[in-house]
Image 1: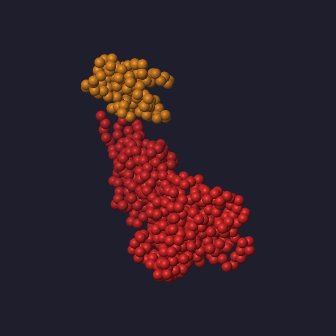
Image 2: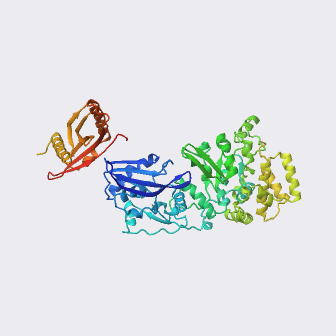
Image 3: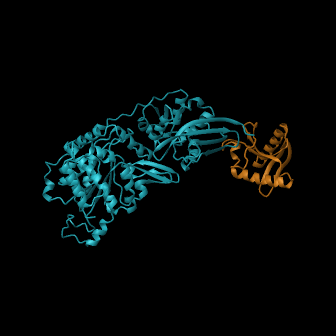
Length: 514
Length: 123
């Protein structure tokens, strides 16, 4: 004979991939031997919430009811993970035993991990859950202080940041209201303060020109050159010439970082373009995303930024080939047992490699000091497949710098000046594509190419003959046109002239006869 | 003088018998022993056979009496109950497992809490 005493229902939330969804935490406290069960496909971290909630309640001065407590996480069929349910479970128990007004907890989403002493800790994915909260028609959300910055990015949602479980109870009971958090607002165009600059790099004017084009149109680049020529140095400065993130872009990037719990402490918004440089031993899952419940990989962490793959041929072929589809589509779908994740992956691929294995050849043309056999060189270069190279628009040789160039620093261009030209070209693109989801030349589809990439007669003739001579694929053709469009934009030219096409084709020339 | 654990247990069981009889239960057996374990009290509540575990505690310093009926103890009681039912050919009867928690308060007064259907073997 079970007498149901009390039932409470508290909204909480969790993240699947990078998207948030709401979960109702139902708490039933009934007579029976003392027990505390959590059902609704909880993972280990949620199961362990029992111990945290018990201790947090006691240490916050509340009585933990010695009755039969059953917690259900609805909808029951989705597998949930994370410690963010500690707070809604604790609030559910408190409202079931009458410490908190039951009516007060139904209109507010709770998110937070509890420590044993009753403090509320931040959890990953607060931004995504805040978006889901708004979508489901809620207006209030209570989160840990550490999560306020990201949650307050969402418009039309009242966010309350709390430090301890007692704060929450006092707030809900109206004893001591917590002040609503102000909307997070950052002027993205003023974000700068890089401690590196293109002016640090001696020589390499050719490579710098290529990186400028890449930044202006968001094209992929492969730098080939002997060790010590400055490939890595250039790559590490690439983001200083990229245009600042727009608000929408920053939001997209922040969502990924929030879901993985990688947001830096502070304002809660990723305000600089990401620069990711994974080591070449990375697995395909680490690069693309994976896990039993799929999580984003490096390509999604590089979304709207740069994915730098140093020593490109050293990467596993499975990992490299897996890049092809996401590079083309701008998103990747990862299907696993625990669910399907769709993650954004619009990044600039920046590759760097040596021309051969002995690392002695100064240039691709081959200096006499290279001791590699032609077969060895071929095998090394063949690690990169044609389809992958086809998707890299700009191939550039980064040669050795002459010693005298190291000390001629006065006429080196600063990142800021290059960035100004890049931004001018980007503004032209944004104006051109306004009203469409396309943001830059690299994202153009066949329709946009048709409309906006009209080469002059001379340019067309040149392009056709180049296609013929180099045996370019149709993808190469359209990609070359996009690069030509960017070069024309940098020049401020409306039409695509022959010299724009000539430069674009030049970068597509397979630098190492693959 | 402090009572031994056995004395406190017997005293609790006496209290339990008085309590149950006042409620109209008829006591069928006390301290039924099987090779699996012991059942403190077996009583009849109407046509239901009730197996009762009596737990007595002198101080709540180490927790209340109800907290002491562990999962392992529950399993023992359920196995012993099955043996009892088989012995008296009552396998088809309605049964129930109750816990009677008796907390001896400082000063000697007793507080009895009966949890009907405390466990059922599902979990």
